[in-house]
Length: 404
Ligand SMILES: *Cc1c(COP(=O)(O)O)cnc(C)c1O
Image 1 (cartoon, helix red, strand yellow):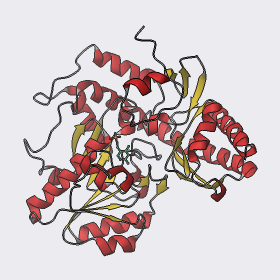
Image 2 (spheres, rainbow, N blue to C red):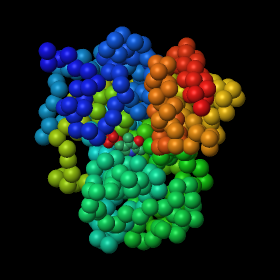
Image 3 (cartoon, protein in one colour):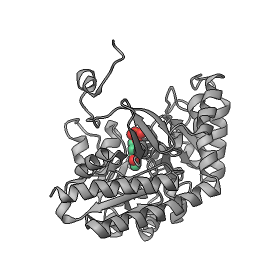
Image 4 (tube, rainbow, N blue to C red):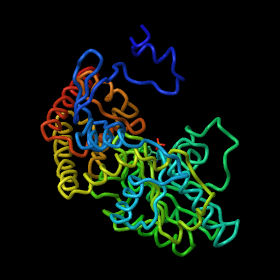
């Protein structure tokens, strides 16, 4: 029977670019997930910071089914109510005056980088094209975005690579000062490096980046694909830092699991993406926009954002208590519900082993590189699920430590 699929089917029919864990989830509710055999898992992975409201949040299911019965897709030859409502709300809640809607983080960054180059060309000439990014950063997997990203292992073998991209040390004001010039069109920074190890920027660094961009007529782009939509305790992380970018990219949590991306910017900058200069067939389609609109409505409720900050403390307290027993973490860092447990030197390179040990205890976690265990749970994860998940993590680490 062709629908009797197992994990082995993956290796038979899929391109081998992923290596998914052994079980196949079939159902989710809140922060719990069930696999094909009916085993129940606690989800601290959140679809990699995507399932901002957990699984099958009733208000999101309602928004999706309501729109699903009305109108799915039109193309950008027509506009639609959900897209206009979403964009209006985003402009009300952020620095932005204009919004471009697309379908993923890479696509949002691609648009941001193209816009920065076009804006520089329009205002300062074609020689102002350099993009400065950070080492260890991640901005997506298209050829342009993967090269702006600062992890060469992801871009190797896909050359020739686009020109005009420089990488500097993250959180180093000196390095940025050294690299920036009047040929720089944009500086792109993740307020917290997500894939790179859940490493928050210093406030002084973002302030200096803002100032240096102003001095050199370069645009400051914040890649908030991972940090955005409440993840860090404010709707966008720039609001916690008090440093405003010129362009902000958003995706992941924005759709709560429905694919959608966006860039936010000012009217003056947006002018450079005039009619016909850029586009995407699905961008701002009614289904994605209806869901994202509901996500934004729920996440921007004060009790949800306050909840993120309170749950952060609950996680950090619990993680530190676990660490007091086993001494496996060098430090626990992050913002809001984007949390990184940096492994102690004895466990260097073994983050994947922690993920596998957690899986055995029916807990879903993430890694960020080789040395960081990353948690990105639902922003509305219930306290009892946090406690139960941390108890499972405790058990996982106990077995990993005793196996040494
Ligand atoms: C995940 C991520 C991306 C890429 O998003 P996709 O939707 O996978 O294309 C870009 N930037 C950051 C900071 C991310 O975390």
